[in-house]
Length: 204
Length: 181
Image (cartoon, rainbow over all chains, first blue to last red; front, side, top):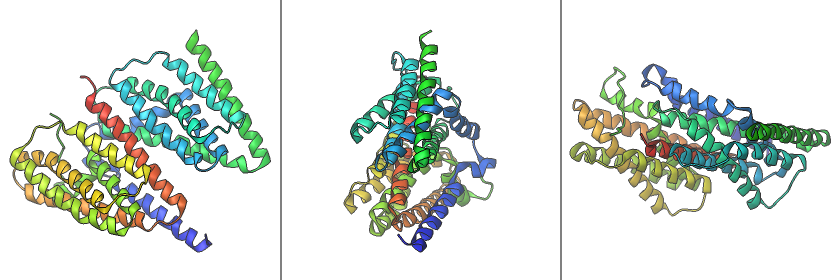
């Protein structure tokens, strides 16, 4: 792709983002119904309120960046969708045992995948990420407050989750350099170690 | 029963309708999803959605105003949004008739839902309805046109990721709608 066409595409993307900002309900806060802004902001802040969730979601992005296309976008698409399914189960009061253990195992598993640069088949990687996402979604779903604006909360929640994945992918871009590749593996080790501490906490 | 909310801008019914979509995400999300979907398929599909959706919405709002049907609005609205978001994420070829059918289904459904609220408003219902239809037309025109012109593979993937986010938000909406009191 030529530099000019790339610039045109970037300009289009910027215009699209600008349009999305204009369309966003928070731009008309003066007219919002009660609870809308708090619903969106609460949803946006919820996924970043726990280190276990943050590390797992960033690790999904790191692993995707290591695996390259199409995993780099397929894994971050899989996680929010399956997480939302888990969240729905939580909202409906469906019991899943060992949620905290599952969340801890997700940090260990995803951290280990980054540490060892695991390269399973794409379907297996997606199933693994989706499996872990159910635990995160269910935990969030059961924590959601009654009342408020569920739609805006949900949108904020999904956007925050997606942005955490994008953060992981952004960090994972260092994978193209030898030193960056090593740093990424160390980051995976740190996530796995944090997961072990979460597991210890969940079991004691 | 949970109903669509109509806002009051203080500028009259038409502007109330025009602004409605911007502050009602449950109505905006499926419209955005349909615009993304039709844009991904190309300009011809975008044109079909552009004209079919507002007309279907106006027809639906008339049905809602006249008959005020009592259906499970939030659940089916979430399911429709989920389906549209998933179709964007999947990016599979669809016939132009399928886009038209989806636009008609969404317009009738969303319009009927809002038509019940318009019936309660009584004064200025037609102006408000026209305002909403114009807002839908504008959103579909801008978003579908932008998406139809993207050529770079990464930009197309970004649109598909956007569709998956809409589907994920719709799944949560479904959970909220079905959540036991």
